[in-house]
Figure 1 (spheres, rainbow, N blue to C red):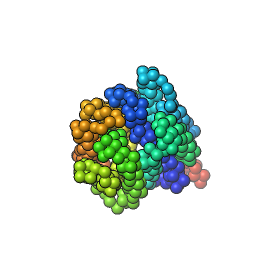
Figure 2: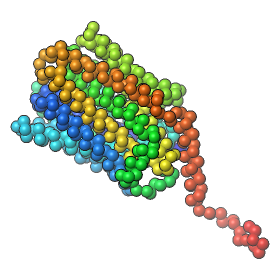
Figure 3: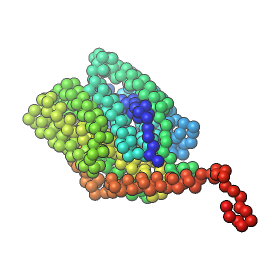
Figure 4: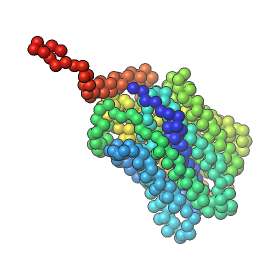
Length: 475
């Protein structure tokens, strides 16, 4: 039976992504530059901190997936953790951006502890949120929508934080950037809590496994699930390359537009504003395109468009570095593809959940989606290491005019490397992903048949017209 969702449930689920991605955006977009340029922290310290925190998060994520998979409550297994994680993470975010006055050593200890704690508490909320997707519906087109809607709200959050963040900071703090960021973080934390409450109270899981739903998950079973489902590693490799590309270009954009182009506020705001609208347009169109175009073609577009957009941005950096039109066009091309990829990754990982049930009889949504967040965090660690160490290697000096070597290095890190990684995503998909449209529909049909067989087997005999056998033993 294909589960349907009300419009209220779809929108409520999407609103949850708005708050949580505002949190992720204010950290991912600004925190490195906040530390190096406003707190004057050494780039190597920042690189080591970010990498260590993300590696720990990556390890921590898989264990959180096991915890969620073993949760049984009247609120389901996802929503309790979404609520708990949101409240704790909102408090930590405020503390992380707090305008505290400490010596450099004490501040390093303080911010290091808070940043690690922020990643851990974000995990508590993020894994169960995305793990809900395959548990909300097993209808293919419904799942396209439920994957696209939260991404749309997430892109809206990135649009607001990215394009308006520097202006919001100035509004809250004037020339005092640390005070401005502190107040900005408080506002984001409040929005985060409200949006998560909307999700928790209005969205319920509907799809359960056809068998084994009462079985407890442990580390041994987690390893079995990951290695017996041969499509997991394919999707995770795609997610790894994509997230390194995406996070590297995002985290370096502020440096690129300020020091390479020489126009930080204006060009960065234009680039991120256009990115937000382009991603939202792609997300809105994906459910429609998903009905008309093959998934393979959409995936090719999701990889080829960012590579082409990065190539245009690289060229424009030489012949028209301060031209807002070229920056905007490049951003459109890059981010339409990224918008497609954000949905596709959720869709194909949901398909892998169904494929796992088809092969092994258990769904294990939280384990499989926790591996995606594992990859996102690992990609964050790698991109942070490349960014921080890269800044040191190319000779970056905060708040100074950069050398030609530093400028060339920024172009490579911000543009060239992400473009190559998107092409690697395409190569892995074409070589390794085997759940094409026809194959996946056949798997869904088989799962539906199994569920009907199970339901019929468990159905009690309520036929009151059945007669007792007579002496001849016939009914």
